[in-house]
Image 1: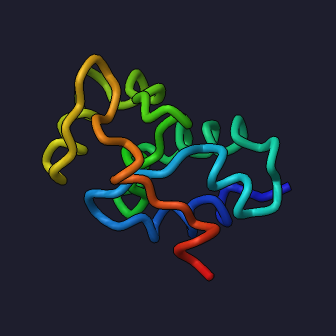
Image 2: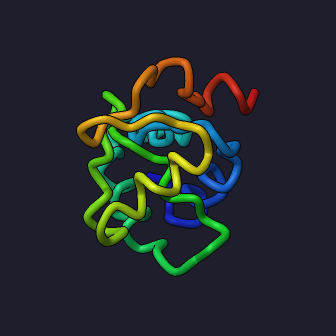
Image 3: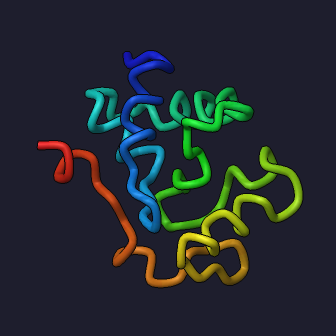
Length: 105
């Protein structure tokens, strides 16, 4: 099972304007069922500017972690990076998806 530091290392590599999912990070780290742990790590990362937790969403591109950012901060950060959000969901999600299993070969 991955630890928070390993999760943070992967998240810190997500480029601006791209997003990934909790499950994609867990799968990359060898913990296919560990999406919940990734979510816990993202919740614990707030206040750490070097961890772009706003770029981690659910497998359907929904901003499930937005409550931990306060208000619409998660959406604002993603929109500032060029993404379009409607009803808490990233539009054209697959074109913005960053898969660590492919990108970090």
